[in-house]
Image (cartoon, rainbow, N blue to C red; front, side, top):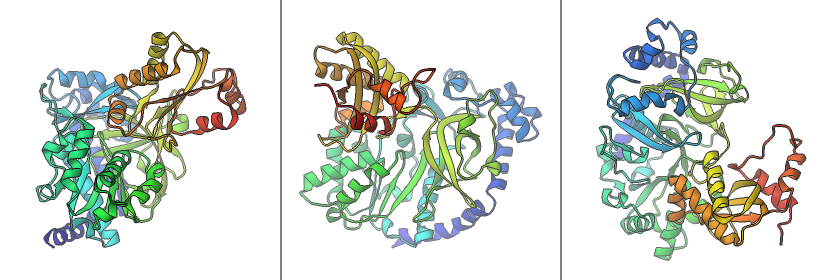
Length: 500
């Protein structure tokens, strides 16, 4: 097959580059750093931070503080206003709109220099899989990428949309004719309607590669089986031989996935982000993803336990250690400088540099890819209290992946000091309030990937007892209002009987 032959050739040509990643990642990082600084000298940001006098990484750290999105937003606002050469020479090619876990909606610049790295890194992940496993069966059929709409907002000077929609426009020509769903189908705004259209386009095709965020793919599988009457996805797509995913932890979904697929299908984990493509799996099996050292990003790392120090230590790739939880800081060829993306990682190997994602720096809920932040949860609860007249002493939100009563959902444990007249109405107002504040969560609920939130009343002093059980009662300790796991939720369920 021509495409398999071409892929093998590409893989062999890429092997020397992969070998450099293994052999000299620190040297590659030094070259990336030098290139970024040279480009940065031509920008407003570079002049503001005295890039003309930078000699090395040590002097860079003195001039460029760590920032989150809010810290760099003033520069992005200037770009939006039409100013040139602000963060990177020229203008961004796109803005990737994303819902952050440490901020609200964010507009991440993607430049003409950074865009190819998003595409090439995804290609490298597949070529590495081919090289390491020798398998080309995933190339024999068609491929489906379940993602958001590729439509972009072009009302401003810089096209804006989700990363999946931007990347959709840059899929190599040799893959376009093999890619599903069609552009028109992918643009359908209603998820239910879009899913039905995807099923109609794919149910009679020979799909060999399926890619997407696990909860969305899981719903596709379930609806596909329902529509076809088949018992397993492998009965519909006998050639299905590679599942590519990223974005959320696959573990909670793994068992259900294999049941739906009806066979063990190899998987490939990736770590794409709007800010850049960070890494991908390079061994099967493997603990950790291979960090890409020459992908237009110069990485910095701060030990998570010291991130909030007045002067936290910052280190380059050369100085990291295994087993330490680090906050990842990015400097990119899209013009992000000292940028805290909020992710924490732990290195499992330094030869080569492999890492696992350990979560987020702040409290959040994103078990289904919704990226709900504390402010959204607090504001939604405030609205529910105002609308229903209830009074709340304390509360906690946790994901319920394996819901015995139906679809997965958000489960709220609420300690009322004054109960609402109707708990069902309180739950409805609360859920709708969160949907208003978080479009990703709204997509999941309206798309029937998640059911509406479940609210469980808990007795007085429930959270006091929990804090006491962990030795954090009193002082400045606070009950986390949301979590991405069920540690608190399971303690409540096991130790507290809900009120009648």
